[in-house]
Image 1 (tube, rainbow, N blue to C red):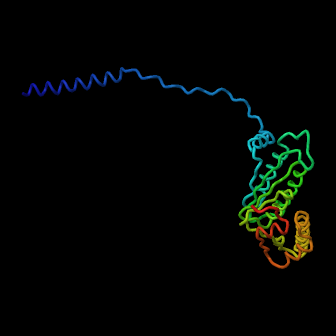
Image 2: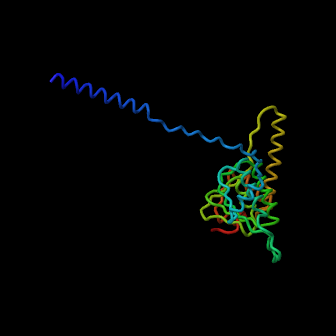
Image 3: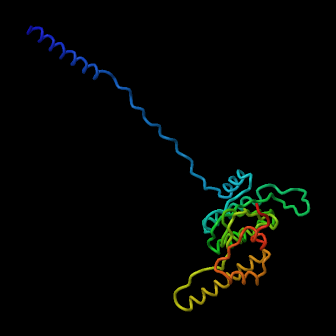
Length: 239
């Protein structure tokens, strides 16, 4: 019995030894060496104008959205869009009376307002683009403060507003602090900006400068219904 046990133990040890030896002798597959990429060509600078044109070509509907605060970033997006779309398609060879050489641009407006400077930047670029194409503005949700001039700046007869859209206009507001001389200078600048705003609104609406001044002096915020917005000439059609 003892001899049998010893033979079993010896046989087991020999089997383990042979297994280890076999594992050592088995050649391993060579590790793959990662290929070194060829030297890439120097990157060319991005052609911003070509990029904008490429984006514009995809926007066959020629539609933009002004939503949120009217700030520097948003104004930059809107202005870039107008410049890309204004003369995107070839001009028509034969134009009928009142027809523009390029297809119209549609802009939806939904904003609580924002910077007066950026408002005028968008206003000016819209007037520039209206020389070659109509601009259809559509007020939805809320059109307030700086947004009212942008809505009204669309091509007359093509400015629309949703029935439940809230419209609000008010005086230009700003803060002044520091030495008295600086505060006086700032107040003068704000007054000029206010006069500029009233002049721009009067040019786009049915309201005279006197009526606008009276309206803005009556209340801090002047809220209008869609019907009143059409009556005052901020829009033309209720949808």
